[in-house]
Amino acid sequence: MKSNNFIDVIQKYSSKKYIEDLRENELIIYSPTSIKKNNIENNKCLMVNWHDITKNIDKIEEFIKQDKILKVVSYGGGSTIDIGKYIAYKLDVEFVCIPTMLSTNSYATNKVALIKDHKKMTLEAKTPEKIIFDNELLKLSKKENIYGLADVFSIYTALYDWKLAEKNIKERIDYNIYNMAEKLLQDVLTFVNNNELEEIVKNNMKLFEFIGIAGYITNLYGTGRPESGSEHIMAKEIEANLDIPHGMSVSVGILIMGLMQNRDITKILKAIKKLNVFEKSNKYGLNIKIIDKSLMNIKPRLDRYSIVNIYEGNPEEKRRILNKFYNIIDGEIELC
View (cartoon, rainbow, N blue to C red):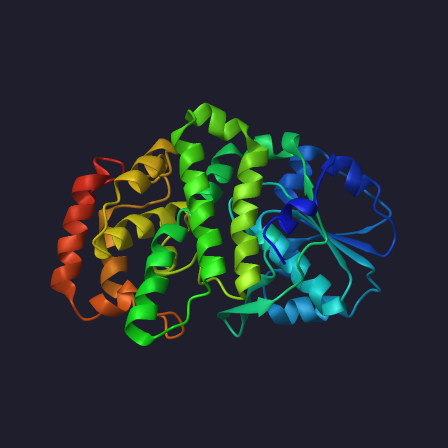
């Protein structure tokens, strides 16, 4: 599978009309906020609020037993999409995805994060046969879409970690995948640097493609290695303490881990600042104390070697990196 296959499954269509045309034995998993916002109804198909199932595997498995379902449609953000593509995978039926925001690349991946016995698990899921692009719908989630684009910047630190793993523990690199991810990162940086924020926000199709192709690259490789490294370890630790947009926590991770990797992060910092990723950091409770605590607490992933392995058990060096981060962030995040 090539990354441009992602482009092949995109269909420009009215999401409202698509949902209203669904028939009996076709299931839509929806976000209540999105359904209400767009005044969508369908009395023929089975409509289920994702909050009624949640991301608990046992609840999902119990739900699947209830009805004969021939098609699954997800209408919403990351959680809604994850539930839908897991149900479609378990039932082996067609899966159609209608993202209402681009805050994650879940609409393009074949993995889901679900919960079993209070533990988050990554599981196989269905890759969408069809992804509906509705520009009018996506216009309603401008900030969320920017967070998704910022998440693509994680390739910057993830590829360095992959190289580090090759050098230190002889992990094999698939250079076709590596080069594909590197090219995507450069394309995104060029797009951000060459356009004003207003133009970036308006170009939903470009964002849709960039974020989706990042997800498809991980499908090609089989794991998130090309776009998920030390920065996501840091983001996960921040998210354990705060309910915060993923793109915001990952951006913190990218900058701190970029400094740990002893790199010139000028270009990536410029792009993150241009997107105003930290604009609402105070609203979400993100501050230096949380970042400090998160960095001091991070542990290496057993299955994914990264720069975190090098810095484990070295709080003095972590403190030095934090001080550099405070200096370069220049008032973007609250200090208290």
